[in-house]
Amino acid sequence: EVQLVESGGGLVQPGGSLRLSCAASGFTFSDHFMDWVRQAPGKGLEWVSRIRYRSDSYSTEYAASVKGRFTISRDDSQNSLYLQMNSLKAEDTAVYYCARSYSGTFMFYLDVWGKGTTVTVSS
Amino acid sequence: DIQMTQSPSAMSASVGDRVTITCRASQGISNYLIWFQQKPGKVPKRLIYSVSSLQSGVPSRFSGSGSGTEFTLTISSLEPDDVAVYYCLQHSSYPLTFGGGTKVEIK
Image (tube, rainbow over all chains, first blue to last red; front, side):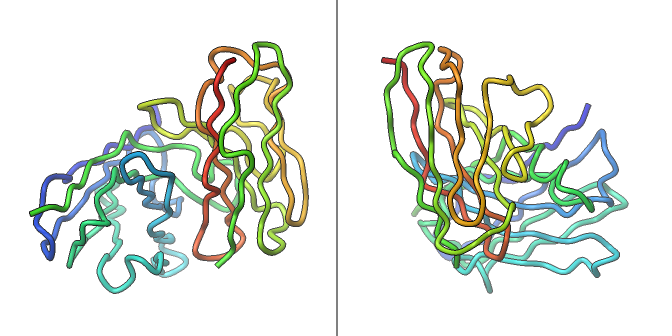
């Protein structure tokens, strides 16, 4: 079964840091770009970040709202995706989803999502 | 950034009705358009990719069409299980951007 499981969310004070993880199974993780998408309480979906695969030098993209504060990374040997979040703000409060992304075709593009992990930034 | 404007933001229709949701891009996005369904308290689910390709396992009453800057998601015959918020997403350029969502309810 293709599966993504996020972890690492929690309550953090403004200005603090958190590291989210996403464990992948059931597919060849290294063959896919991977994305983070978030959803603030009662709000819509917001794309956060992307990391490409090895042949694209693991290059990354970020939303303007998180650029310079968040860092996406991956460990293909562990089938894991990460999101290091620093200088957190109240507006970063959201459910964070990891999602399988591009793999040379669009057939599997954002077709599998984890259940999400909740990040709450509050004093 | 490419803005994705969805309409309507909410709607109520009867079981069996034909439902159409529109997504308008602020500039051309070719066929880089995906539709998602998010039921209350659930994870977003991909329905349609590349404008009109139906995700495996998604009922055939869902269809997508459009080109350039205007796209539609159609539910040919609304069922109670279709109560959800529907989002479009453009992946033509960074940052990827979602529409604001359309909440579909049963009348």
